[in-house]
Image (cartoon, rainbow, N blue to C red; front, side, top):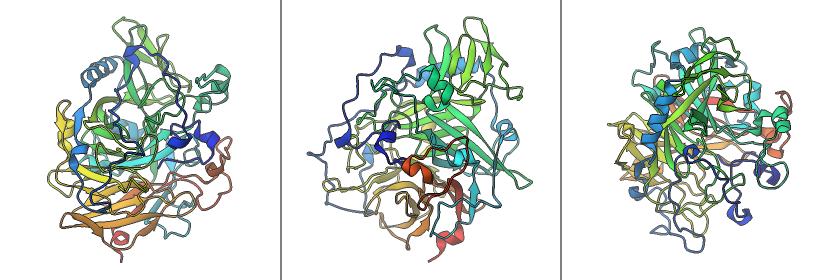
Length: 532
């Protein structure tokens, strides 16, 4: 889930921090107007390598965990965020999910998907190929999955009662223009922008995918946004980030941008995991459309803010975002979905800073999310990615919340029902999904070997093995259960040539390196899940 390019030079350009022993102290954050600042960071505790919190007993894989660290409290900026989004809503036209899907502009190949992240692993029931630029992008790394089966009990959504919808999320991993002169200050100068629009830190995008009645599958990208008030006191928006101002990897934050390792679509809300903070919430009824006439060109009329000035849009320029000189930009994306609220961990995170180890107490890392509709009430699962090491024996924790409780915007929500340590010996959980008394966990195994789909069940409150691991895609990620079709979906994150930073030009394919070729969406059938 974390490391997609294995060179030190590329690591310095990503949103991910290097291990603590290799990290240097970041420069002081650049000053930002107060109104630009995004949600305050969750509290970081004092957990350090020479004073870890150990599990008691020393190792208890699968056993009960303390749920108190999972308690969430409403984001301090929820009221301000709601006011800003309402103001943004008054300026920019909206699009419903049905309209967005009807105008999806990208194609998925379902019939002859030859790209192979499975290697020696048995093929899944379904394997869908993304368009080549998405399958090989150095910038956008897929992570989370959800879909309409999570969103509604009927598996239908919107004015068109749309069905057969999957969503996957990708985070911006590659910003080649952040620092071209080694002064640790991102410049993103005009020459860099002209050469490559990836210079900008865009945050996260959600890809809406739908199989249509004729059997074709189309998809479209939507940028996630954060509303703020700019220097001219106009409402504007930026991409979502979980830290602002620092251009160097920060060991205290793990990454300088939202990682989107998991997400759940429930009702008209989209819950997105924020690794060090908790959960961010977006609203399907607040998707802004910067090209309402659908001609693919800029110049569409937008509304007026409190200044009364009529604005327009520009979706051709991929280098700008928000309102600038009375023109709205969105890094070239037609659709933008703004954050409407957040839930933050109440307890501090005592994970060793800048590392992938986990401890047994304090707030977890919000590495992945999924929905369990097999229980009453429906529950949102949250779990953490980690690698246990000496002194940090936890293989990661997982717990659940009543998902309806997260629709509030104040107070606290506690994990209820159960909380467990994962029974994995070496950690590395990228996604987990519960169905009744069973739990499925996706575990990645580097760039060169198939991942594992691990099968567990609850027995007297503990998680125990429920059959051998199912070999699955290299770079296996978050999990989503499509109830009607009885399919367990995921997405693969790795792309072979990126292992040694072999940049591709002009969206062309290249010879696969090692095991991985290119990214795919894929699903295992119920029969595959139940096989011995």
